[in-house]
Image (tube, rainbow, N blue to C red; front, side, top):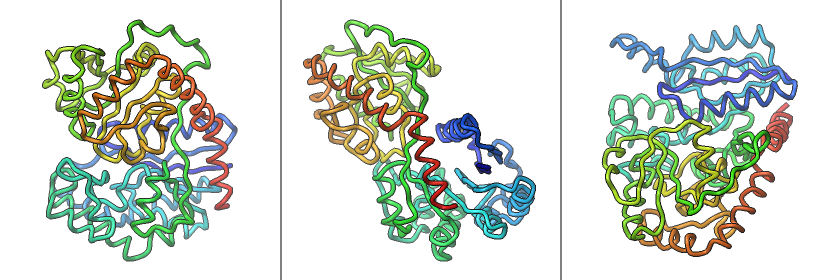
Length: 386
């Protein structure tokens, strides 16, 4: 199969960029022919005129449509898989595909098509106002990067294509990463029959190297951005209640990093490489993910499952779909430091249950999140629109 993958890279490299690369590599490893059309936001113009032109083309870029048509005519793909078109490629990619009679699949990595801020969060709290209401509400709050002008540009794009029926009529199939994410897009008016579910995946860390022996005593591990939406303040409050019962190691960086220095029983390791994170996951007793936003699809959870690492996560959004309470870990009430502390203490006090969770985690990984399972699911989606 010949697949044209389309992706607008972000200025700060994130998980989505890695998913695109992994998916392209997965397809090629099975003999499919992949051409990757990428543009990079690092190359966006910094002068006022350039920024103005970018803003004007966010809703619809005729220049990008011409480039898309050239690529489609030259490559002649069987299918186009769009990962991110914002802001440079724009939804004009759909019209190019329609013109060349090539079906389109679009992965919904975040909530950009229904929320100008992309994360359904405002002022540190969940916000769903734009799902059923006007996206222009985001302008008042400056939901896109704290900028009212930037929010106006994105809100106009969302509103225009919602009103024009773009999402309903110009995309053959959407890929949501979880059942929860699908429910939010359906709530926003996306056709339920056009949304398939396919999670992200990782390679098995134990394919080449045997797992290491667990550290004794173990520790709790947090991996990710040290910021408010990740529930860091709740995490610190909870650990202050454990009275030294369990060490917490934090691998990552972010705006709240300095505030964690010198706190008893919490060690901030800074940013760590994937191989270093793998070692930490093999040594830890459980992973903690106290996020206070819905999350798109936190790959760190799948990494934990792959390492047989139980998870203690917020009972919220996509985490509800990935972690099975009482099977692969425990869920706690979001923002509730007392509940988080109680659940962490229970895990420490029940090592036999931790072992059971660990075995279940590996089983769930093998059932749902391997590269082979992902390839099979992706081919089923592609064939459904061909």
